[in-house]
Amino acid sequence: MKEKNKSTDKDDNLFATLYILKRAMDDWGSRNIANWGYENFNITYMPFFMNIGNEGVSNNEIAEKMRVTKQAASRIVRELEASGLVRGEKSDSDGRSVKLYLTEEGHKFQEIAKNEAKILRKEYVKVIGRERYETAVDVLKELIAFHENLLK
Picture 1 (tube, helix red, strand yellow):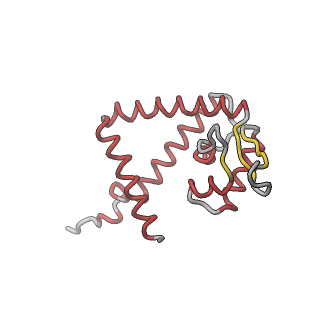
Picture 2: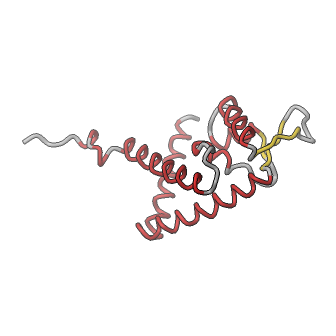
Picture 3: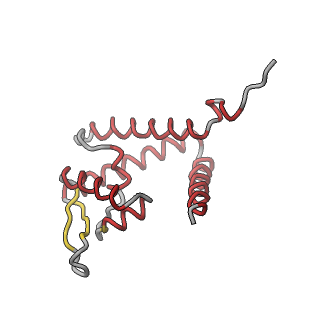
């Protein structure tokens, strides 16, 4: 009897597992966002949106935080501005730079998203326990650091 190759087994395939988790989270987010009254918000922009705090952030800072090119960040920022949730203002310290801020509606949306993320976290903890949840997050961060070190 031939043994199953573990590297191609869907249940053990890290790529498939991460992809399916991302899809599940995107589906969860899209459903919830529609229920919050923001059905036109693109869920893939959420990590970028959530990195715009009260003190404002530049396009370069967002690109760096999200580990994407400045061009990719600019495209997403334009979409966020078009949504009315984000606005850009010329930087006081550097006239060439634009700082991004949340609009009043953006603040409302971000508070809803933060609260819903807390609820989801609580659900995850119910399913797998606090220690395993925290371990999972720590392991994912270690894997990210591993890949970032490869790029240096």
